[in-house]
Amino acid sequence: MKPKQIIMNTIFSCMLLLIFSNPVSLLAADDTDDAAGVVFIEGTLKIDDQGVYLESTDCLYQGKYYLGGVLDENTGDKKVDKANKKSNKQVAKQIKKTASKIGKAENKTLTNQEIKGFFGAREGYLSPVKVISPMFEPIATGLSPACDLTLGAIYLLYLETQRIKALSRVISSKSVTSEDKMEESLKFYDSPQNGCKEIGMDELKIKSADIKSVLKEANAAVALNLVAIGAVLVNMPTIKAEINAASPLQKMAGMASIAQAVAFQARLLGDNKRLQDRIKEAEGIMEMVDKL
Image (cartoon, helix red, strand yellow):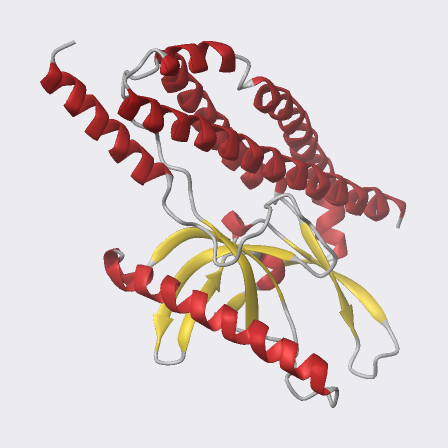
């Protein structure tokens, strides 16, 4: 290979890394961590005079949520207040970086974002643990054909994950407490594609067979996806051998590509496991409806 070609390949590899390494988190956290109180809400990130906000497309969390610290700084416990104040400041610092990205984005808008976060004492605000951005189609560099193929396969699995996600949201429900706090009832919502309109019990029973059919399809698809994602790095020995045969600079770029492939695999596993849980929850809703 000619020196000029080596240099161009190295630059191209570095460009790939820059694309893949686009920061998507506000605070370091694992996507698969689904702790109590943690929510995952999709939507569009925008900014106004009040700050950065998420315009939600999630049927259970409709509306507009500003990103910010939500921990109470006046609990009466000085130690807790100090810790909460520090945490809220850290969140504000990271949100400032996100605001900068929004300001540079087309139309000052970041679409198809997913916020992993939690609600707190501050009404109308969501404290972000992580901002998960869309995956972008990888650029083949030729540095490692096996790695190029693997990254391409991961991207296809990501697209399938998005398809399953749309399927699984055919029905949603949330518990609603009466004004006197004495009774709880369930509200049901149609899919985002149908405007998240509220569905009454009679309509839900009429649609029951169709909804269960879609959920069955989604459940089968996510099971296949999990198997495929688990096996996507099967060519790792070949990838490493190809990268080890490259020049030192190319090897650095190649090892970073491997790390990115592993990270993407972990992300997809987390996404699909959450989808599986969501589908099971929706199936449980329909079983309950059939018994009423």
